[in-house]
Image (cartoon, rainbow, N blue to C red; front, side):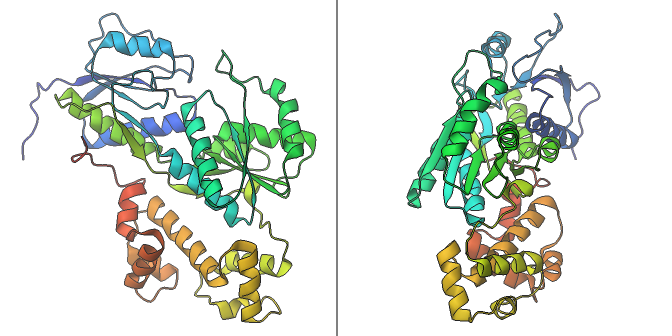
Length: 400
C-alpha cells in the first residue's frame, strides 16, 4: 500500500457555502464525508447567509480550490479573481464555464406530482419564486408533467425584485386572492420549504384548512423548518450529502490537474417525507377512503385484496371499479405502491441487507422482493441504493 509522505502538502480549499439553511449544511456534511475518506485538505469556511457572503479571506491565503454557492455577482467576482479550480453548487450559473452539481428539478417535480395525485388530488398548483433558476425549472417541469396527464397546473410566482429577500407581509394579500380562486381541494407544490412554510402561514391567517382544502408539499426537507411549521410540512428530501460529496470529488481531481467541462451533474432526490400538510385522501368515495386508511395501517403485513374487503361492505369487482374511478389504480396496485415506497425509504436510509428488509415486510425470499421492486421502478434494489443512498457515496471515475 502506498502511503503519503509526512511532507505531503495539504490542499487549501475555500468553502463559500452558507451555513444558514438545511440544504447548504447538507452539502457541507457531504464534503466532510469525502474528507473522512480522502483527507488532505485544509478548509477555509466563514459563516454567512445565502445572499450575504463573507469575502474576508486572509491576505496571504494561498488557495488551491473552491466549492462555492455562486448566487451573487459579488461571489462570482471573488471566484473569478481567485482563478483556481472551482466547483459550483448553485443553479444561478453566474460563471457558466465551470462544472456544477445540482438537484434534478424534473425528478423533484415528478415526485411532488406523484405524491399529490397519490393523495387523490386532481386540482394542482405551483407556488414559486422566479428569483431562483431551480424554482423556474421546477415550475416548467411541473406544468409539463401535469399537462401530460390531461390536467391543469395553477401557477403563482412571487414578483421579480431587486432585493433577494422576500417581504412576505406585502405578499399575503395577493396570495390570499390566489388561494380563494383555486378549485378545492387543491394540492400545492411549493418550490422550497420556506415558500411552503409561508404558504401555510397565509392559509392559517386567512382561514384555509390544511390539508382538507389546501395540501402543501415543499422541497429540501429542512426538518427544523418543516416541524416548526403549522401544520408540519410535507417535503421532498434532497440528497444534499451526495451533492457535497460529488462536488468535493470533482474538485479534488481538478486540483490534481484533471479538466472537467462546465456541465451539470444532477443529483436525484431521495423521496417524500410525509407530514400533516398532505395527510389527506381527497376522494369523495368514503369506502375508498376507508380502504386506503386500512392499507396505510397494514401495508407492512402480508395483506391481499381479500383482506381489504373485510373493511368495507363491497364485492371485489365493485371495490376495484370505485378505486379506479377515484385514484386510477387498483387496490392491489395501492398495496404494492405503499410497500415499494417503504422499501425505497429503507434502502436510502440504511445499509441493512435486502434479506432483512424482505423479512420485516413478510416476503418469503429477498429475490421476490427484488423482482417486484425492479418491475415497478426499473431498477434493482442495489441499483436504487447506489443512486440515492445517504451512505453510498457517488463515484465519478466515468464522468467527464
